Structure formats: structure tokens, C-alpha cells
Length: 99
Image 1 (cartoon, one colour):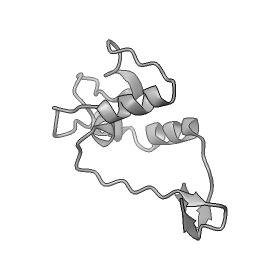
Image 2 (cartoon, rainbow, N blue to C red):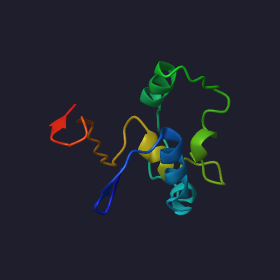
Image 3 (cartoon, helix red, strand yellow):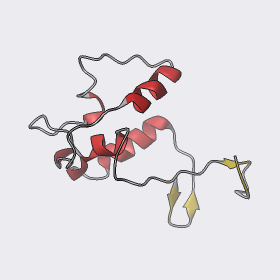
Image 4 (cartoon, rainbow, N blue to C red):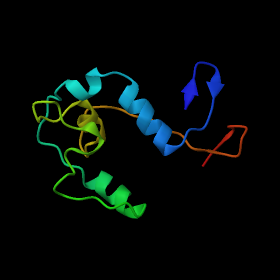
């Protein structure tokens, strides 16, 4: 994660916590597209030996508004979305080579 002029590694738990605390609005604002799929996310979970229950999947990770509609968090995590997220993984510690 990059914060101003500081680079630091954070754990997946810390990233989840950060995403949930960024703003209450990300979980309370309905995303425009309500026809979302999460196959890539499910595959990622399975690849990391994490079990997902289909009956609670929509409620996990705060992806629904209080009214039960998909929120912006769901929109970001969906297979097809209009959000651009760029991630770089560097080899080593000097950040000169991408992995």
C-alpha cells in the first residue's frame, strides 16, 4: 500500500479492515448495476482454501446495503465492473523490477 511518500506492506486482514473503514458510504450506497457475478472472487477464495457458503455469500464482506441491494463494495469486487484498480507487485525491496 502506498500512503503519501511511505510504502508499507499490509496483511489481507488489514486491507479488509481498511476497505471497510474507508467510508461508511461505500457499503451504504447502492451500485448502479445490480446484476453482479462473483465467479473470480469465488475462485480466489477456493484457491486459498477458504470455504464460502452460497447461502451467506451475498452478506459476506458487507456487500449489501441495509435494503438488501448490492453496494459499491460489491461493485468493486464483481467480475464485471466499471472501476479501475491497478496493482503492482515488485520483486525484491528496491521496487525496480516488477514481478
